[in-house]
Amino acid sequence: MGHNKPQKSLTEQVNDNLNSKLAIGESKYEAKLKNAHTEKIYSWSTYKAYLKHCCYFVKWCKEQPADARIGHKVRTLEECRLFVEKWIQAEMDRGQSPYTIKLEACALAKLYSCGTTDFDIITPQRKRSNITRSRGIAERDKNFSEKNNADLITFCKCTGLRRGELSQIRGTDLIEKDGKYFLHITKNTKGGRARVSPIVGDENETKLVIELCKKSKANKIFPNPSKNADIHSYRGEYAARIYNLHKRHIHEFKNERLIIYKNEIVKGYTSKSGRKLIKGNEDYYTTINGKKTLTKGFRDVRSAYYCRKDLKGTLYDRKALFAASRALGHNRESIVAEHYLASI
Image (cartoon, rainbow, N blue to C red; front, side, top):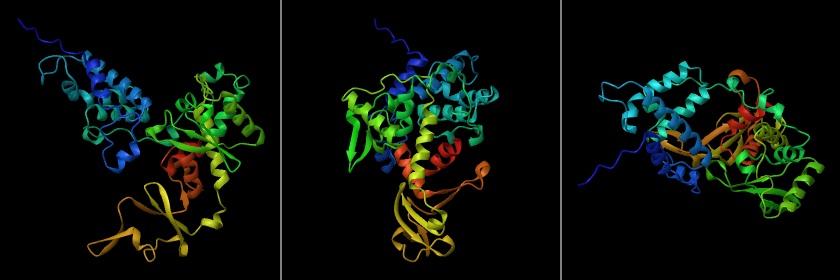
């Protein structure tokens, strides 16, 4: 006589669901070009964060009283879907930050293969002024010796690696070209995008980084970086170094505009008062109903990047922002301007 197979627990169902969406090693950028990236998870850090919050969610659902709509306590992910908005509201009432709320909403959207706008709730707006990460003195700083970790700090400030990238970088990832040194970063990168980033520092700092790489050879340089090291703040220092290497005087780009395609500068031109010009740039425009409009995927923007809101009045050179963005492994210049440079 046959027996019904016992139903998996809710956390097991979450595991199976998210595991089926793992695409480690695949290019998120290439998937975006095909508009096929929303179903997959491309990095372990994203997977771990989503798994953690989705498990919090289903455990919370399991603790809720039986719902009249299903007639019993939740048993499946589909039944838990009825509680999404209620849980997000509970998290907001609990005082979770807008960034945490957004992360939780994104995790559940991935779990249910939808967008966060499909949930019938408006999450709080994220504001740069509410960010506390790497600003001020944290409790963990008391347990971290800058003197004992001087090599690690110098290495981070000269390379801008994320924590996961730092733990995987090897001496053989060092590249020398025309007397300049770079790191080829391929492991634990955001979105699975490899990059080549310049090593930037004074003579002694650069020499130290190169010596550490050559000494390690094929071995990892910092296999277990201290959990108390403020890696994000070192990335901010690196962003400033890259930006300052490339920035120009305002008079050099005041009236310059850039045509950008998928976060790559394809053309620069100068116009009177920095206004947009269609003439001479027709290749980037499409005619719709007799009106010229930028072809999808293109941006026509000023080289002068003006910050808004609490950073209103701050001006950056967009070309230099792009250089810093590429070196950091980001694909938006706004992240560098409003999160890295603004925090140092």
